[in-house]
Image 1 (cartoon, rainbow, N blue to C red):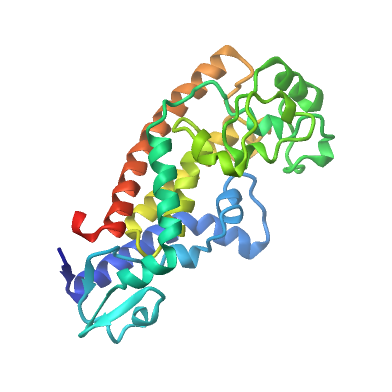
Image 2: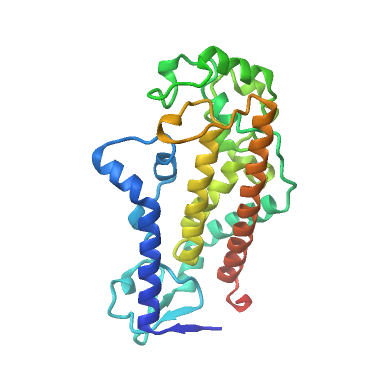
Amino acid sequence: MLEVLDEPSWRAAASAHADRVDALTAGHRERRARGIPHPVEDFVFTYYPFTPSAVRRWHPGPGVRLEGAAADPRAGWRHYRVVGDGVELDHPAYLAARGDTLRFVRDLLSRTAGRAPQWGCFALHEWAMVYRLRADEVRHARWPLRLGSAGTDTVVEANPLRCSHFDAFRFFTEPARPLNALTPTRDRQAELDQPGCLHAGMDLYKWAMKLAPAIPSDLVADALELALDLRVLDMRASPYDLRAMGVVPIEIETPEGKAAYVTEQRRYAARAQALRACLLAACDAVADPQRQ
């Protein structure tokens, strides 16, 4: 069923979305302009290849016609079409161009959502990424390791590595890879991704953006906000000492720290599962407009 938004309504929605994204990206944009790196937040804006300006671009999703938008620049955006004085997603063109991506993402999200969450990783992927490296070789060399290089290596060797996410595992140091219980690959991602994984939760932002403009932008903003929050948890549990920037460590090398981490992990996993369900519903709406 087609929903028609009058011009004041869709312009207000677009403005509200832009304001929300501007607030979420303000720190990154200000630091980037000054050339100041940030070991926590930069990841979301450098690892994922989406600029703040791309994220702030508002899309209503499928089945929505924007009244009076034919004269607006969005009439020329890719995968949109003009109908009368309105603009809407060009469903056939979008599916022809992005159908394979849509099916891949939907399958991955569905299989991940249906899997039992695992709680035994304790964010040790960040520790495995610096295992047996000198202090000047680690990714965030400007920041000290809480336990030093030797102490960090001891934690990796004393705790089983259970990383299931390829995009975390592929950054393990060579000596750390054989210590992992799994050997994730890109081809096995749909087989191994599980809903307790922080990186699988952060990736919801990637999938939402990859499916733009067919995914409603409120879900994109929700996914960006979740990714930023998960990144903070990720680095709180990392071996880096980031207290100087207000990042309070979760000492996962201790039983108390492990318990604290899992408590936070469960909370964020529930939030990610709810968003994953929304993205699945959005994928279904794109694939079959009659489901709306």
